[in-house]
Length: 290
Image 1: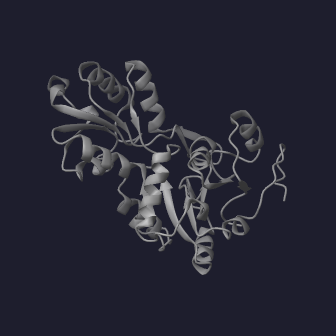
Image 2: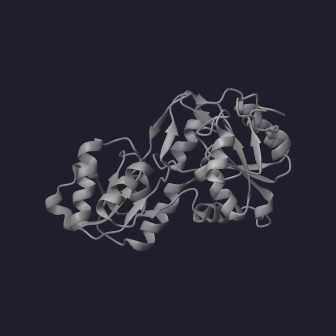
Image 3: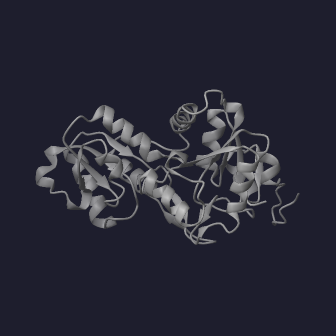
């Protein structure tokens, strides 16, 4: 089936593709929802998965809220099948790292107070980067990039740079996304891009969690094997809208991948982007709705 875009790319029906698998990993933004909320009709897709006995998880780089709160946004929008055990976020990996590596002290974070959940559930104390008094920088044991909202970018990033000039501490990036879609044609800068800029300025190596890192996929596979030990990589389909995170990450981990054209990779440029990046999905679908 042809997409009809100027640079044509062959697409397949999502349902015909996903029927070959036991488990599907969905990205969130650009796949299941956009700036307006859930994609209209996505409920029918989840009904199809249920009827076909296909399990699903939402594998997201969104560390802005806890898994419980992220799941609640789906339930409130009418998608009752999504509960917190179905959410696997990069923030969960960041929390695991902090729990193992930072035993006490203060953790500064970049983001909203709500996003600080991932730090606070480890028992560590937190302080927003913009509220940090640099005179007390010696108390800070780690810095975490969580969300692009909740702070003044100018003051916040200056605080980050000056803190890291003063302290040699681990810096965790809990969302590696550079952009996210905010309208049919526009994107906004995500926290991953801000972290990358700060990293270049201070000349230090940050610790990243999230797609395309294979650790994110390993964490997800361990998560689902707690419920179904028989699931293997060949049983899983990764569905995403971004070549550099969702598709590259799935390809490197060894699971099949499906690119949808409803988010960061629009159909009019998808073929060119694949040729430019060398990142090729196993399947291309217009959306998860068909």
